[in-house]
Length: 248
Image 1: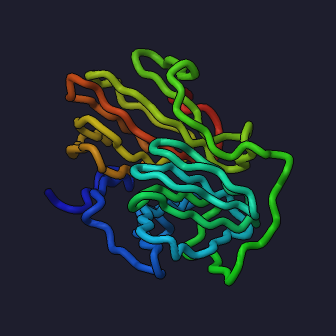
Image 2: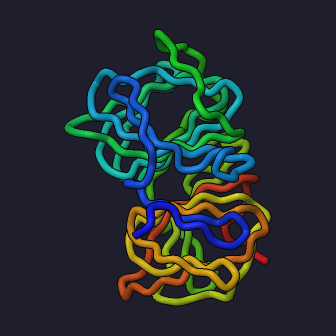
């Protein structure tokens, strides 16, 4: 399968093995979307940490939102410790330093930054700044909190309630189905967690499967068709923040 598939209006799908990777000690990252790939607001990186020699990072003026794909560990934000487990979301507020440490093996995650930043800062030591107005930074998936939109379901993980200014993060469930094409007023990046199907943009389509990364520009007509009897699960991040259920 072609590594990056371009569709109408700047939509694209890329698979993890098609991303160029850069390493900084035990921190290995690949850019999923940034200004060079057509995004105007979001940067997203797929990150793997495979040792305890994890760097201290900081993005001075941006929301940073994490989603753990695989593995366990913990994150230190301004001296505060939070446990990380598969499919949890986490927020680092602007100007807060953080360090992510895997426990018991490699940790793979998505790091979404808004406003865009290609690099951020690499610090020699942990800065102690932490916004106590938002003490709870890690959110777990809870089916009791999911909401319906048509025949689909979603749960918001990270939003203004935990301190995000720019980004909404949600986990979604799509049954075997195809919605009419629609568009959103936000820019969005989606990762398929399980299942398979097609991404449609206008008259064009391309296959998606577990691991596929999808970029959707603002106001571009599209739909995700799930062809899997077991359904499709996905994690989405979008700017500006709002409700995943709003579509036009």
